[in-house]
Image (cartoon, rainbow, N blue to C red; front, side):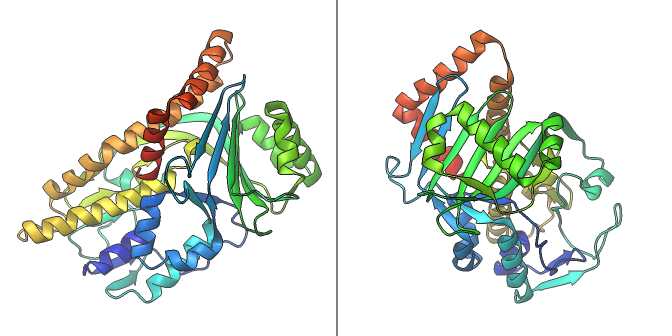
Length: 369
């Protein structure tokens, strides 16, 4: 949807090949997204951000804890930023993009593509179908997928104390637990829960009563950082619990003659850094910039020119691959139960906390994925 809006704003004619293009999002969607500065800039240019901001909460501080005393703290104030990120409601984002598309010029809704079928005549086919893309498969593109054996567990929480814009994450070996400050359903006192756990544990959590899930969550926090419970107050479920399998994946080709991959159709990674959607929106931003430049400097080339599309792939490959390697490395490092590695990873985390330039570099990478 963001790509269709961005291309329309640049004067391109767009066929939106998705039958449910303007349907309402699922009312039970409990996901939250952490949007970085580049994503916010894109949504601002698409005139979606002002309305979405009402469904968002800023992150001013990020506290990260290891499983043996390691700790890192990122502060917007220390980094000379207004905020580190914004936590947004997934359903609201989808709804507002749909509403914007209703009024976008040069966007036509057409029947959904069938795998292997050309669809409507077009210079460029942009494939944004997600990790299970049939069109990608029909093109013969390999999608090397490594299952983690972990599932992401998500829910909305209501807290008895205000969150003060503080996001918290605990690397607990083998699971990773994150609480993202949010404003729904309780303004200034809600969280989005993102908990990466082994599949059997995810299934246990899904089968639990609300009270048992709350007890399991409190126990996990108490084991990792006892004083955090007093800071958070009582945590209560404010939604159903959702879960999905986690994996690391990368397409072997991002583009070809007349076609290009974006978002989860091109790459997938662990959500521990909250960069999945940011990387997809950066794909959009980059592709539109490449097409704009080509139109101005090489007007004889079409939007589907293979050389033009390779420029997009080159620009996006390194930041995407490096972020995937970073998240995968962090997960694998903290999943290893061996004692020497436990000391090493927690010591390394505390060392990074003391090295200001490295912290600044990490924040910069996250802000402009």
